[in-house]
Length: 92
Length: 92
Image (tube, rainbow over all chains, first blue to last red; front, top):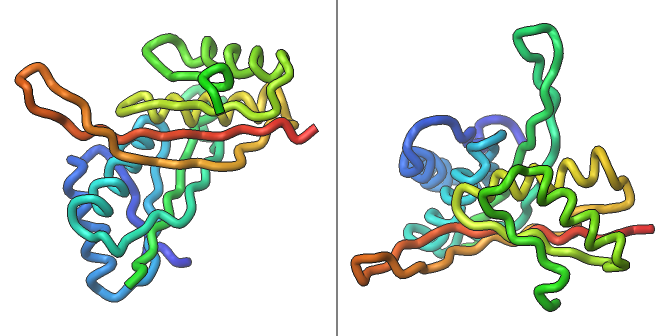
């Protein structure tokens, strides 16, 4: 899967990302992946749930994967941060 | 699964919940479920990842389920909130 089918969750409003997901599906993607790290993880789950429940019943969550990523911090050390990948598929 | 094997994530420090998970496994549970709603979802993922990576390699995340719950609000209406359930199993 290339980045074209991926929606990265950042600091914008939740609905921006819901729209991005819907846009990907409308372009014909059968599968999109929602990715987030740290505190944005909660928002990633919101995006998937809102997409499915309010806008696109055919979009199912087919896989959820969590991981830990090591990020370099300013002091030259590193911090661990949790990440999530939520795969949604168009079942139509 | 009864609530005995469930760890509910709230507003305490992350490590409190990691300890609660480890305690459940130490009591002999083969499977525990970490549950969270709303913003605590990110913390639930942290708890699972920290448990697995730092304390208990035999504890694998075997299932992640998300849902939307309807909560009554003060005005007599209701608000939708996302929830997560992370199942961890002792593979030893």
